[in-house]
Image (cartoon, rainbow, N blue to C red; front, side):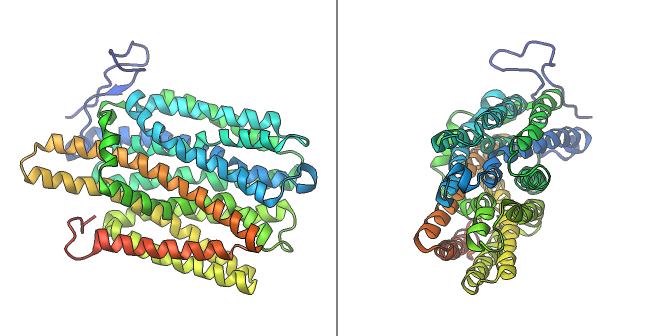
Length: 460
């Protein structure tokens, strides 16, 4: 019977060159017997706390999509353009830190970095609680809002870590569940904000922060007690550089801008869009907060389905159809904006959230599938299977980090598009047209690279 034996325990010193305890050296998820007898239980245990930690990270990352609802213009003097900037900056920083967070799993171990990254969430939470009061300068709010970006990095490290735990045939499901559970942090903190607005009122934003402080501590302590580090996840330093020379890295990053970038961008901006687009219907923060959580919730819940569908039918096929659906959703939003129909507007945005969630799952499933296909070709050409598998794991982990970072910048672009559109025309129509055009380009790219007859990766 196969066994998994941590090379150290939490009470013994780690081997030279490795930090912390609970290291697993023998990890063979592609071996069916190993997986069924031992690997499955260990992977599920790590997945559970990875989801929890990432969920809290997403909540803190999207903190300012809620805080701006507690900043009435007459009291704080911040106009709509300024509020869009407060949600754009943490989005940008969250995208930026995803690359070093991906490296961190290889450097410190998945368990060890989960502890650190969870503890770092205390910084933006406590800082926001200290400064958020009438009279605070806009510059101070901008600086503090940037700190929330550390929550965005948790996604990259979590996905890289979980990618190493699961066999290729289950990566879509596992990565989809991990990401979907994390994405739920966006609607959950918005629901918390709604509850505070409905009970305590707009003068008590610190209650939202106090709710999250104990959960941040639980995430860090739980990771220390439950999770493991995998030796096989320790990427060689050249992996990221090698991935940057791989054309599929940039293609998948581009597609991920359209899926995850849309999800996080819309999630951060939706409340402000409602207040600016339909001012009479959403004149108060409470009115907007009653709806802002719905789209992110649906998009998060359906993400694992996108991964499962990709496992069954192929990620490229699901991604292709999904971008067509997203273009249709954006067209519905554009039409609703022009005829000033709130029900149609909400329907269009629900479609965008749902299909961005499906696309998140399907595009991430494509990444390990691409390198698994390349590994099979290498084995057929005479490469040792173990060597090919290790290379595929390193490259897919590196690509996940790069795509996660670049895709998150899509959220920045979404917020900037809305900001510019409302400043220039007083509506979001210009932004909606840009979204339709971008999704159309994604449809073409997916077809040409991954679905066109004769392409080498037609099965991805």
